[in-house]
Length: 119
Image 1 (tube, rainbow, N blue to C red):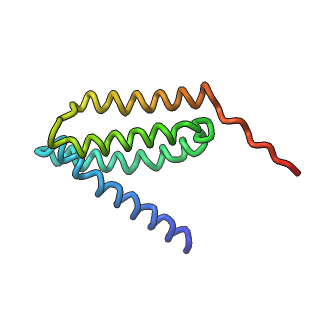
Image 2 (spheres, helix red, strand yellow):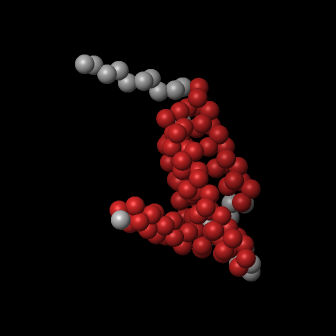
Image 3 (cartoon, rainbow, N blue to C red):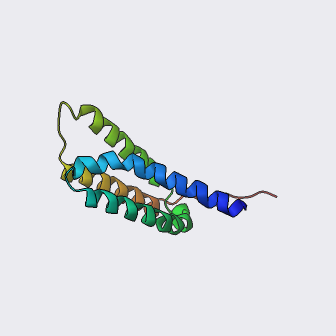
């Protein structure tokens, strides 16, 4: 049935994202496979629930896409300069959290105007 195909594709996509995050977990906890597996399992379970929550509220956070672009640029720069300069995890977390909070606050302070429909 089509529903089975859709569920299969979604699960495969979840698996691809989990495989992508495994090297990051190895960098954090290389000697603890329990943390590696459980964190990926919880991430897969949590992402699906989080999607439905965010899908209902995404129209309220119009500036979030700019914040996410800044975060991705920061992570890219951090990866490029990592052989030269090490940025502590707490500083990275502060930047990511700060940008997320600022983009959400900017979305709430300056909401997009609803589009007018002309008939």
